[in-house]
Length: 384
Image (cartoon, rainbow, N blue to C red; front, side, top):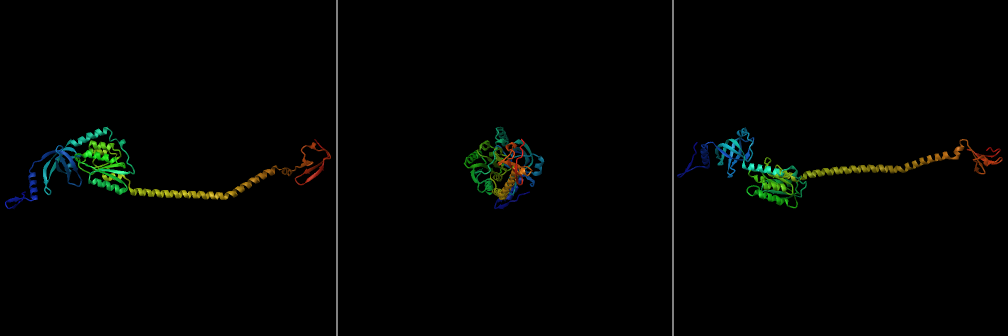
């Protein structure tokens, strides 16, 4: 393949496309070689023909974009993660449309954890031994925070996601924002300082630390010791919303709650106003029903009491009449006249009832009272 040039006077001039194609031709002549580096920004998708990643020199920070056919990558079954050190075999190539140099890999061999990943793992074990990640240290989030603190980078997409999520769910929420560096040199100290500052606000009851996705290196500040300890000693509960769901910086382990995304963090720290209003409407309906039922029961009780009070005088008089009848019957049974009806008589002498025959004498006049009528008689004989 020959790259064509044009002439401007005595100058041989190549177009950009021709120049890139020419570089590509020369690169194809280079032999296959091995490159050592740390894997970062690994991206794989079932719909893609290639897997994309970046090789980074841990000493100088130099980076090289690389690709490998997806089927070949899957066949290796390496399960690579960002930060691992590898040996990659392949050839240099150029993407002519953009003039971008990349490395077309044919195979990958794992060398072991990269320096950064190994350091993070050592720190993780150290802090875990101190109990900084223990479940019993985790605090519950307040149901209705007076104010929500947000620590995030300036003009970060994560900041917009958090603010939009909070305001759409609970417009009345007060938000205290503290901007800070979230990557690069000095970021760990800046993040820790921002967390201390916002948590010291007298109204802040919970803090969200948010940062969008990024490479392994980009998220390294959130695995630094100073940041992890700042999370652990924060005076209010902390929600970590750093990176994507598959990222796990050490701050996630020290946080009271981990959110998969900044938007998810917003859903965790404030209630949904619509849900609250719906719940309030349900409670109001239940209260209204309960009051109506209580009033109905009281109305029925008062009706029964009224009916009993209306009937009470008649019942009282009837009971008293029955009682009087019983008393009259008992008195009637005790009356002397009731005895007379059974054939007995009362004998009186001088108006006094005789109980002893010796209280009278022959020829004495006595009065005899019968059940019906009376008699006057003269005593013929006294038998003692």
